[in-house]
Amino acid sequence: MPKHIVLAYSGGLDTSVMVHWLKQNHGAKVTAALLDLGQGKESIDDAGKRALANGATNFVVLPAKEEFANDFLAPSIRANAIYEGVYPLATAIGRPLIAKKLVEAVQKVGGDAVAHGCTGKGNDQVRIEAGVKALLPGLECLAPQRSHPMTRDAVVEYAKKNKLQIPQLKRSTYSTDENLWGRSIEGGDTEDPAHAVHEDAYLWTTSPQKAPDKPSSMSITFEAGLPVAVDGKKMALWDLVAYVGKIAGANGVGRIDHVENRLVGIKSREIYEAPAAVTVLFAKKALEALTLTKEEMKLKPFLEQKFSENVYDGLWYAPVMTAIRAGIDAMQQHVTGTVTVQLYKGNVSLLGRTSPLSLFKDNLATYSVRDSFNHGASEGFIQIWSLPTETANAVRGKAAKKPLVTVKAKAK
Image (cartoon, rainbow, N blue to C red; front, side):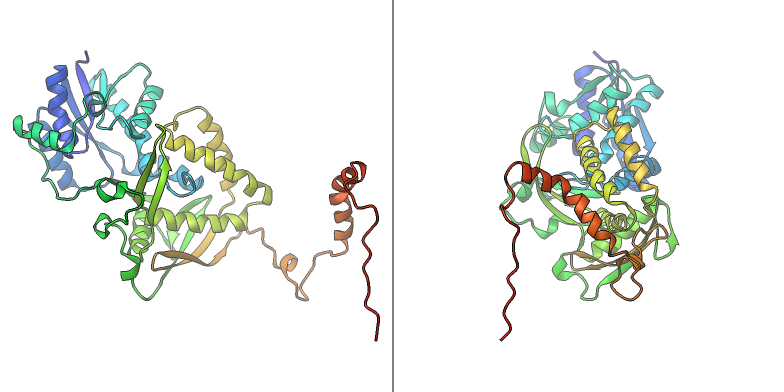
């Protein structure tokens, strides 16, 4: 039995009750560890008071805002990380950081186990525990909602019976999770793929029907694959993402409705809000089309897919991620420039892009008098390019017996 458990603590209903449950069922000290992702000092203070009132031995705040942006979000932006081509991995990319911080807290307080509030049918249990096992092999991981699952009503009843302090319960039937990159909404009417989601599920995005009638535009500047400025104003990544998200969300951009394949083998209808992610990744892909070679653009989607799948599947710390990230980073060194986008009633559209490293050359692409392309060179290129197919078809009898003859119309 563990003697000192570090709990990944959010301050919400489940983890507020879990502090007491762990102490009662394991007879251990409990350190409630809360990640600070910029949620505000007041909410952190309230969460800390609840943890101690419910029996926690310690309450610790783990600063993580800048680390999340620079060490987890930045690689995801470089990778254009989008699971199944739809979900920009907002919740998923935060989980390996939770695992890392739990391990750090265990080492700091002298704990011998960690615990989390994930259920037994979701992805997050895998992401957190796989991360913990990679960083500190052999450390025990407890998941009370997996070993002793309780419904929301049962959790509330447990709290009342034991006179625990819990956050004020809202009437909303939704379960949400959010960080800088996006917000996930589960439960209630979202579980039925045939059911339209009620407007009250959304907090970060205006309904496209109610969005401003006048479009907004912004110019996002990238350096080596990362956004560094908006409309010429340089910002830290954390502040830039928040700024872009606010403007994009006000214009109805960033709503995602996806039936995705969970790691545990079931399909799940998921609702997300990710206004900054949708806007930033749209702009960066436009810049990549300008600055990457043809072969780089053929290779990168494969690396992007593997990166995204590994993040989703909880393999952030897998050795193969070192190779994947190295390949992506090598190609991103030349993704520098500025992209101007328009945001209007739920849509992002491209207005223009420029780059000092642009591979688009006007004298090669133009059909005007400025054209410097050697048209005559194409004939020899076509002969050599076609030679393997021409030879194979001739040998295998697939070629026509006689060359086609063009019939010219007789003059009247």
